[in-house]
Image (cartoon, rainbow, N blue to C red; front, side, top):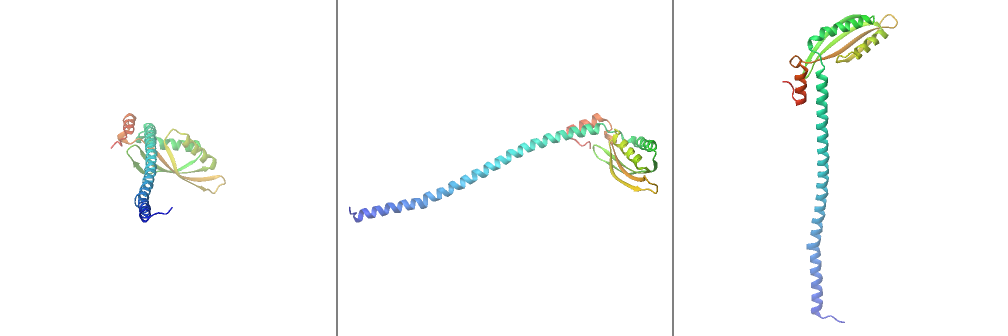
Length: 194
């Protein structure tokens, strides 16, 4: 079967229209569809990250509330600042009970913050190493909020004897928040007391 010129022309024209449709319609639509799929994947990933961040934010809020409760509990049990002399006397008595020579108790800087105050003491004592250890255990076992921030031991001339330089931070309720109920209310409300 032989095709006429007109039929060949129609066939070529149909192929040209088909090729032009593929090149000008199908390919751009494919590219656009792939771009949309990429955007959808990116948006889904961003949405999943946002959901994870929302969970993290709720977790942070929960932990912050727990920390406020713990701070309120800690600060509600702090003694008044006027108790420093009593604590120094207690340290002196503990040193004497442990057969230690108390060479010096020196108050250093005092830090006052919204929810607590800190008085730093430098203590120098000497005696048997085991007695110094017992003294430190008594400080640790006491119900006072105290933190040993620095300690250095120096060997003395006598065997088993040491000289200890201790820096201890004592924590107190600040004067304006000496009543625990007021302090607890401020902490739970998220306030600073200023």
